[in-house]
Length: 80
Image (tube, rainbow, N blue to C red; front, side, top):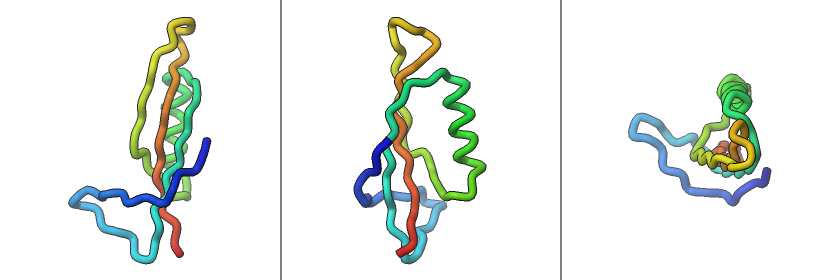
């Protein structure tokens, strides 16, 4: 897991910007099975910290069909 740079992230038309907040990206590369990844994302959605999944890429591993390589980019907002 590594933090990304402060980023400009475009919000959907229905979303509104958070005043006085900075946007930060968190990039996570991991190996996981499908159900564990789903539980992790569910925990993110139910946490008290505002995190959103910006992108998700899964790549199968030829030697282990039950595990996938996952590249997950999260976005969070920090008030200044």
